[in-house]
Length: 539
Image (tube, rainbow, N blue to C red; front, side, top):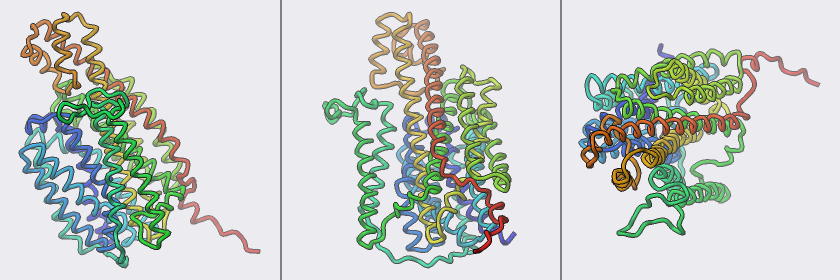
């Protein structure tokens, strides 16, 4: 037991970091009502939690090299606990955003790279592979358990107690952190602040642009932001497109600067030549796609279940249960399979199952989501994500030397959290944007009087908010519609929500198919067999 005490401590921290990405999704309607906010605001908070980590993860990894990995781990755990406490006590969305999306995110950027590096410091050989597999399984378990934990606590107590529990767990992690060995010599390097700014601002621009596409449009401006009475849409193009373009330019400038720093003999924030390692490049790309699908799925399904069907947090968690249980189960199965199957075979199997599950979910998206087809789709999606989670950590870490593990840990954190933030921003914006389009089309094609259509058009010209479908008739009557018109409007809104769910599921299917191209560089040999293979005879 003493041998595995380190991975238990690190695993507890990893569990909390990942849990926060899914635990609140089933509580969206409750938090919206409690803090008097909107689904779009909650989408922003969920997105920026992972975006903060993605934007600052490389800095966190570098600080771990300078301060020492265990010290960075402890400091990050303390910062994270502070953020959880602020979130638990938040009286409004602004303070929740500060505590959860910013402070917790900044704590996590120190903790996550340190976890990967400290495993390399504390384990060797087969034990290291097992330790990385355990961390991968813990991540999968946290993703899966989040909806159940969040649903149970929110329904029978209060969502705030989730964050109180996180404070307690992180305090325990800090208390037992002395058991962790930090054998790596600290580096004495100067951090390039311009590199930090270029990477952070570039990623924020890209993700924020996608997040706002639901309101601003992608290319053609829909409802542009204004300064005074002047709409901001340079050259008649949506600000979304300009932000994504500017973000891509900043990321490109960041990569150029890293190469320039190396040429000048200075320490870069990340050695971009590592991206020439085929195994690492494939592992990171698949990891990012995996988390994009996970985050998108865990945002759009709870929103539909709660806002259209009126399910509470626990009922929502139970509806997602097939995915939760299979994700945990197949994380273990994937670890066992790695002794007889290559990582590429396991990853490709997982990816193909994910594509099939997306097709099932698309076909199962009926009004009440009660079909066995939906449950089967969720189960297979969990199985696919579990297989991927069991492999990718070791694939990435085994592609470099021990000296580079901290840096790769940072890159893993970047791709994992960038994937999550892109998934929530992109799929969430597709969901909300298509709701607006479908609702406008439904109203225009309805039998509602022209006067009522005009009234609804004026009220929704800057987009359609996601609200409980059951409340639409009441809102319509308050706006001056008759009872019959309001009832018809509720039906149109429900149909629009289902239509937008179909579009969002298709978006997940597209990401899943695209990710198949990323796995070509995953190793095709079985580690155990490679060890047993006799060396070739000399001369």
